[in-house]
Length: 257
Image 1 (cartoon, helix red, strand yellow):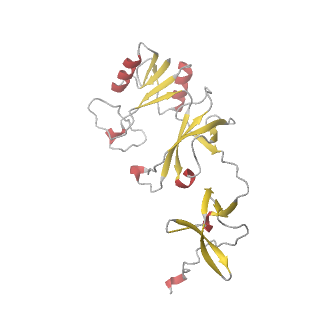
Image 2 (cartoon, helix red, strand yellow; image 1 turned 180 degrees about the vertical axis):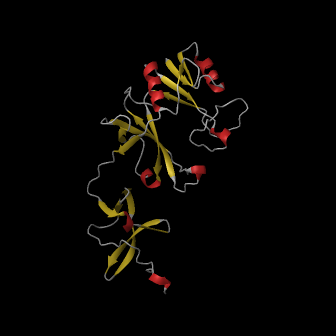
Image 3 (cartoon, one colour; image 1 turned 30 degrees about the horizontal axis):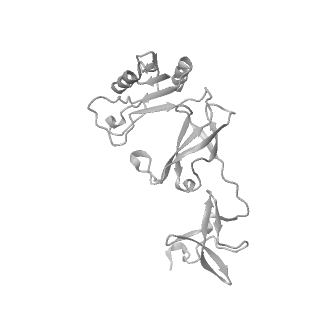
């Protein structure tokens, strides 16, 4: 196999090269030395590298040690490589191995997670390759949520997911951004409600069904949901439901009672 090792001149990179050498055709890439040089902050530099080295079978990219900066990164900052004796947090990746088809890594909002499962088909539009739509599949979706943002302060619960691109197009490059459309299941004869018509009460999903001159709570089952609509079971067609919670007292302007 022809393998590119990016960061080959560092401590970990040298160990990777030594392990692969003799069994594979290893291309050593560094910032200032090696068989080829690349600036990972420059998209054009990365593209020129892949064009010069192609064809190849896999890429090993040694990561920078962001823990050495205390988790703080600013534009223009030079992040050091991993060195012997460095202390890193648990789970920190020190290298990435890219082989075979390309993958997209995304973070899904909680509402979207419920509708996405491994094996679903997706359509992928890569920003750097206009007017081309790639086909792909959902490879993995995390079952546990995580928090993101600066210092992990983003309160939004998100789920890590991986989408596999079913193409070996040579124009695909690591680090590019893309837009993904997930092909949902075709559903027939279902009942759709606006999301604001469904309320959570004691862990149960309910709607307020009109009964005479009032609204009464009725439990329903959520079969599927999108950003603005839900598919429910347990409710008859043409049932009139409330879009606001009738059990909540309306707020009075000016703070009056």
